Image 1 (cartoon, rainbow, N blue to C red):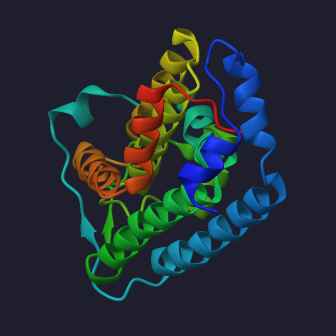
Image 2 (cartoon, rainbow, N blue to C red):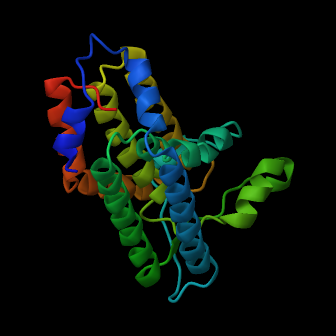
Length: 238
């Protein structure tokens, strides 16, 4: 069944179905496939990411600091926002209303991550060591033991967060979600982006490259265009 037919088969106007109920309906749609697919995707990504992190094929380039990096000091609390990415990026597929929309998100998210991995293969990068005693922060000891500031540019933390935020924004508009929900989406994304600098896992140049990668992936995603068309027509997909 095409996406347009699937939507027309289970849609109603926003005024008839509250946005929170519409989101619950979307969460319930093929939830098992979404859960398994997301777990497998993350697992495959981490295998490739960590392999390149610990076994770079070429000399590692240390990314330079700019004024923004020097202005933003280490913020211990930012670890929570940084780690929340793995919940955040699971939300767009969890809320996908159709298989076509789900596969569109997965395909372009996969392309985004693959592009980053290819860059890491041929141009390994790392952030300069921070003047922080990580032993004073137990959570950071775990983080640094797993991800020691390598595979820096582009920041896939930023790229995947921003790409997910764009998808979530389109979905929330489509169901007529409250403004505070749409605002919370962008606030969460901004906290994740800021955390990459505040945890000293990335520098500003990594953030800018990750932003460009996310915008490119979003521009190439037909699922986002269909979501935009749906929000103008104001349907509720179930």
